Length: 87
Image (cartoon, rainbow, N blue to C red):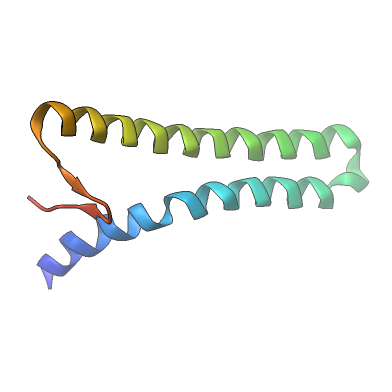
């Protein structure tokens, strides 16, 4: 059972990266739309906050991909296309 968690959690993480980033964009837009009655500034702030969170997630994805490629070039592959190869 412990071995299953070692394989399942990283694979789940790699499969959820892009949907989490898109969800942060959607949540920012929806929360901005619902707060329009409080003023345009508050709504714009929520939309910008959603964009900022999504950019952090996309930046993390890009950094992880860059590290994977660099290590793959210089030291051999460490991840499979579906995620973590194990210890």
